[in-house]
Image (cartoon, rainbow over all chains, first blue to last red; front, side, top):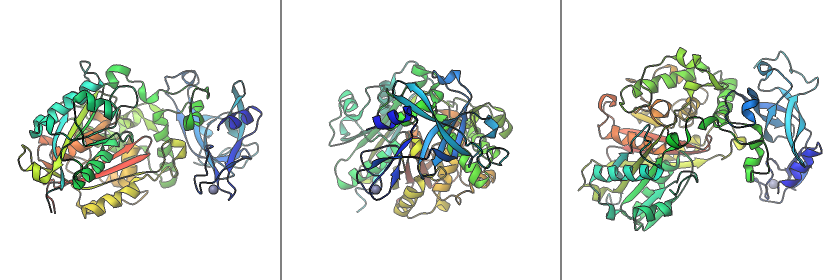
Length: 131
Length: 390
Ligand SMILES: [Zn+2]
């Protein structure tokens, strides 16, 4: 079920699902959570905004304990679905709800890419916006 | 037809907050023995058993524990909705008693998580590799979110939408600590101030250490039966007037709205069954895994309007001497949190309604609301208990 998602991510592509009636969803499942129909894969834009976030300052598990502090965000894609991700390439105090972000892939293991996020290039409100 | 009206007649707590002499199953057993002794029910009368288990770490699933205790059940239920499991159990047990599926129900919980796993638990994460994780967890595990982080994302969004402040969240922890000072067994009893909460270190922004519950050992047990059977027992019955549960998600990334929980769906159902409103409630025993949990439950259940939780807590309703005292045993924030704390909320509600709460007693306590939150603000269970049956 999930293999196409991780393999596509390792090729730099972010996939979500859309059913024949147009309902979009993430994470991928065997049924549409609105109508119960069969969803199909769809390439996402890779652009979104921060819906909410936290700065993790304590985590005892590796490898995360060596990366503290870091941002975990819920990103709302342009397509309307949300996914969890890490936000990189910015200062912690820059991060705010509504911040435009874009995806970039991290190679986690062979054939498995993991979507990370960074401030959208030239996006409005990337710096100096209020939150 | 009052005969099959469901009531709580017995409660028992195992040793807490730290009990290295007990394992998880022994917490169940000790709490059961104390609950049976409390009301005078014999073990062989139990014909209904409910147990949420401990999340796969122990043998305490419902069927194994029924065997372990030697319970010949006519009704059994292993519903697991995290910390709110026991509010769901009361809902199910009340229905089973009403239907005549069983007469005398036992609900138990126990955990030795502090003695077994230590205090790092709430900020333990999973590895980044996704291949070790099946199902929805694979889409969260790589990002190093923590249990605290999930609630922190709800708090962050609440602050963004409504202007809620860290000071307002801290107010909740301060009030609960005041009650902990009256509980000789509470883990932390020294008074704290809002400044103390804000000065404690950030664990996951915007939640500080003192916005987070303690990690403890502990367990509890409840005996329920019919109002008719209760007449011959040692304790006055506490009536289950309303009990409802609802779910919006399980994994935090699927939370549809980070400032609205399933309390806004199950609350009206429970109030409707009981025929009362939030204004009638004398004390609330809420799941206080984090300060934000309490604020979202207050708003969801209609004690204040959505977004006004911050102002509401500042008005002092929840404090000792207020009109809606919160977590009069010291709560999860200061007294005990063995992992799934929902049974403690019910037991403290019963103690208040019996007038057995000592220095923490809420005057003229007629109606109590126990509200559990399980998972990551995922499954909410609300139980309204009363001293009288209308
Ligand atoms: Zn659909």
